[in-house]
Length: 378
Image (tube, rainbow, N blue to C red; front, side, top):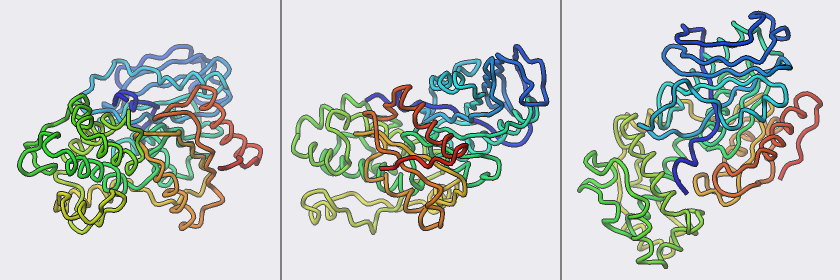
């Protein structure tokens, strides 16, 4: 799987800001949501953050804040900000859609949460306050949707996280990102081409070639299969998943100013001969500032207070199956279990939803909020 498959979903922005380079069509009213006559397409920038707003011909007066997934740092951005591929599904139902590019690429949660809220406030100020506002996020956008609801719950009616990274950032980096790379480095030494300081060394490569990783895996299929089982990544997708984890880690090191994980006391399990693995796995002392950044920047708590629907994919190489129970446990511990519905997994791969599946998940959320029909859960 290419990392490009992870650049899904739409997004949004924080308190009223300046708009530059806007274009809008079809606006006949700017204050009362129900009286805006579409279609409207508006693109521009709020405090230099690109965004897009779409309002359909027969707008129902409600708004979807669409949050996109992980965007690798340095990937060229289209100008103006394009319509998210999921947007037509909501527009066809009569919802307006607003989506932000976020101020930065990579693990951009610290920017995406305020950027999303900024755009919501801008939309309400220009087009009128929607009767309901929903958060919908894919992949990392699912994380942003949950974090936004936790922080600004009074301003939203509910949230939908699809193929979301629905775990605290510390868990995602400890258990998924670093564990996978430490394990690969243990069984396939030198394959990552690391500098002497290993994963924490700034001189290590900024990214790795998945074809090189695949070639290394093929030299020891026994180890490759063991790694595949432990990481819950199907063997054909393993090299791509490792490449993405490496890319995410390197970007976070730059963003946080150091190595964000300390695994010196970690006791690894599930790698076959765990005694040998724990003895031979490389250990890293985390940078205190970087670990604090990871723990404090819009980390998930489980305190939601509004309806939340979550749905994952089967055989997702980016968000492993073992993560599916983590956010529900946080929500239960916070006393908000009645506000969470976890739908049965569907589709294959990462964000492998059909338009019909995405639409059905969103309908499950809106029916719950509007008609009191709590979704059937897994």
